[in-house]
Image (cartoon, rainbow, N blue to C red; front, side, top):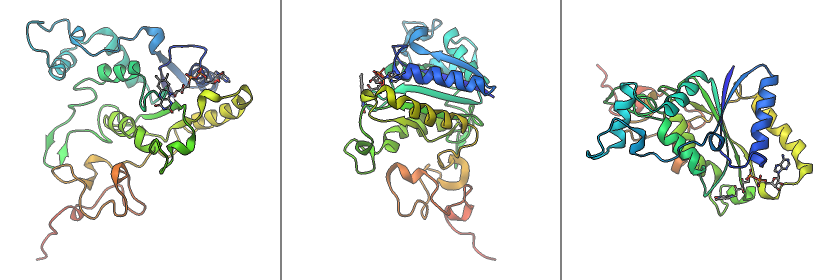
Length: 277
Ligand code: FAD
């Protein structure tokens, strides 16, 4: 299988660097094809700005969305952006290796998303009308591909539990899992999260390596996070979850299939029941 690793850490000898190297070694040994986007090593341009559109007339007001749409449709994107899109289309699974920085991804990786997930590629895909609001959240250009975050975290695990002071890790990663990866269609696996990572000792490495390689082995078989598909009958024409769904839960968890709920909702859950003849 084809696997892309997007790696964001400035120090090759870091813990993140070691996890990335382990993933490359292990996946290659299992017979997979692996490509790496090592963003710091590549000198990745992290800032999304007018420089991304050399054809844009700088006297005109820049709409990044519009310029992105035009560049993608006319095949005039910068080569670095187009190359990353090709890697994504080549990949059947994508692993993101990064440290949690200020409750999110490092800026260089966010900048990779901002620039590579272009209009027409990752958003603005499909028709928008009625209950169908584009090909997104389970559908889109990257449908059929799997994604997994491998994230190292300074804080301790209880701090990221449901009642932990930092907030639940699922909630913190929801914008990435749901908003960045599920949005253009990818199936998202639960993250590989390494807590308390700044205090790691060398003796802990073998068990960490074992847990990580087990997750790598499940890349194509582990169950993804059961996000509701936008066009699966769960949301009304305003893209609001229909009444009767998500009972007993709240917040971001509303967008997870609840036990017993079918993946494809029957239309009658939606709104007015059909009158019987
Ligand atoms: P490194 O510093 O490379 O290593 C960490 C430990 O692992 C060290 O003890 C090192 O000796 C050991 N190690 C490294 N390589 C190996 C190896 N091959 N084998 C065995 N041991 C090894 N944390 C939070 O919880 N929430 C936040 O919001 C947050 N924000 C942050 C923001 C910034 C700007 C920064 C710099 C840090 C933040 N942190 C936060 C902490 C951050 O998540 C951790 O520092 C990071 O995850 C550690 O990963 P690293 O690769 O940088 O580790």
